[in-house]
Image 1 (tube, rainbow, N blue to C red):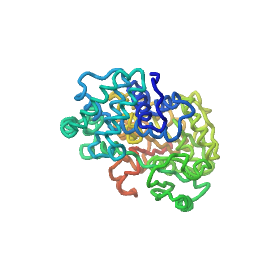
Image 2 (tube, rainbow, N blue to C red; image 1 turned 90 degrees about the vertical axis):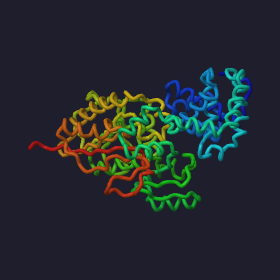
Image 3 (cartoon, rainbow, N blue to C red; image 1 turned 45 degrees about the horizontal axis):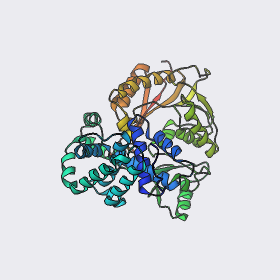
Image 4 (cartoon, rainbow, N blue to C red; image 1 turned 45 degrees about the vertical axis):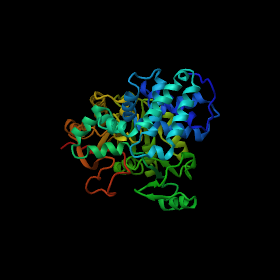
Length: 449
């Protein structure tokens, strides 16, 4: 896919081409963050932050609207466009100009999108032959926009922008809330920060943001939500470790685990280290951060160095005891593998990468991990089971089965936090728009009767 002409980094055509490459890779099975990393690496060191941001924005927009774009393309081009990069480019353009609410058109003029998509096609030797087709397909959509949208939006996959099995599973699992949960998953998430209260206070950090003319508000014990997201490198104090980027729902983990000075604590499945950092900010503990992916362990190191905190980092399998030194832990955070169905607004590629059978397979693995970690907990110690899945067999069903198998005492915990739904009774905050779809279950190990 060598370009036949060089696109300007600051052009929409360049961003569309880069987004198409990323979407194509997701379609081939890569996670979006890895796909974007590949695209940025291919573009060279001269790629500007603005160009990176534009490619990322268009990629996320497209994956949040992929069901609609696919359905439109099937009507506009009955024969699937080939090669895959051409199909992806058309989906990127259609995602921008077909938003029923007009959000895409408010950002980009529709005719400009068409023109720049044609330019992007012409720049790539694998698509140059089809630039006329790109022009014809997109201009036909603009002429027939209303009738085409009316037709395709009758299809659930096009209306909701999720695979059919996902929609059906959500309706079965949450018969009263399923529509609101699906809609919430299509909204861009807020940018929420966790204030490092070892270094500053929430009030002082809000004052610092105000000095920089950045509007924000406190939404949790250590959580601050920015009114308008900004790039990480523009967040005041981020590089100095004053704050970390972390969803407000994820910030509930450390307080729930109730750590105190001197405790021996395990963060299992710890990468990229957000919860590890929060635990270390909460008390002077002896923390072991475990993950089975050596590459992702580097993220934990980076995060802890930025926060000027330290932990024992181990590469190992949480379902095994080969890495354990035999000394029990006072607290265990078990953020187990799951389908990640609760964080689709933050990672829209997940809905297109997952398969229905994944939930059962991951639930089996998670149960093995939980049972194994339970053996490493001291009597009267606490284990916090965390999953970012909204599917009951990975969350409430898993928690209930674990408690029964291990005769574990389940302590009060917030349960499910579904994006766009009220928080469970007794928890502050009203609506959970600020939270990803996390599930928590807190257990205590009882002594012999």
